[in-house]
Amino acid sequence: MSGPGRAATVGFVKAHAYGNDFLFVEEGDVDGAPLDVLARAICRRQHGIGADGLIVYRRTAAGAAMRLLNADGSPAEVSGNGVRCLGALLVETAPGEAAGATAVPIEIETAGGLKTLTLLEAKHPRYTFRAGMGQPLGLREEEVAAGGERVRVVVLSVGNPQCVVLSSSMDDAERRFRRLGRLLATHERFAEGTNVEFATVERPDRIRILIWERGVGPTLASGTGACAAAVAAARFGGAARSAEVVSPGGAQRVDWTDEEILLTGWADIVARGRWIPPLPSS
Image (cartoon, rainbow, N blue to C red; front, side, top):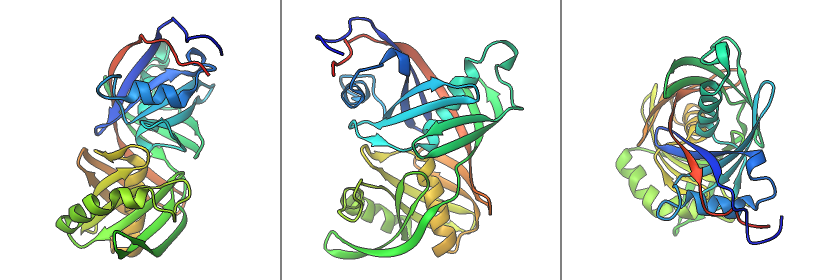
């Protein structure tokens, strides 16, 4: 694409899950535009629309394919909350009798693998899904040097990189979150950066977390972060394999089965509009 930028406005949808918010634009509307530049502009809360990330999607026969960019323009593999928000958009805009249907799973193609959504409840503008998030990979404990100390962490992938710090109390988690969140998210141990959760097991079926998201910073919620924290706490922190994971934005349910991680929670569609500034040129 060449020239000073496109003059036509671009339609968007805004949705959030537990305060983790995303902007959605259709792939054909931004074809050829540098998406990193667009993400930084459109996600900026003071001068843009404001969001934790931009999701560019195209519809498929089984659901949709998506690309996720963080608010800083960096690419990300997948977002559990973003996948659910996209599912809500697809259900809301399904034609005719398909709108609100619960029988057929929705397949979302992501850079972190295929995610399958089952709609449990539809009460516009809120849609509740159970998402099949696949199995965790590379699950292990390590020690890394950060902030002048050796920090014991649990590292794994749930379609994107995760680093979980298990803490004895929320007071301890909050102190470490403020001091170590950014340091761990950008640590040299993680070549492409990582999402970081500070987790406390309050009881076997209840885990409380704080989240420092790669490319974003502190966030109210994270679907993949909830999955990672639940798996880390079940393997190394005494939690059950089925637990409520509570973040500042609210509680999601994570079930770690022999087949995969199941993430249950809602997504709200909150706005539709048009992005007026010209699209950036490549």
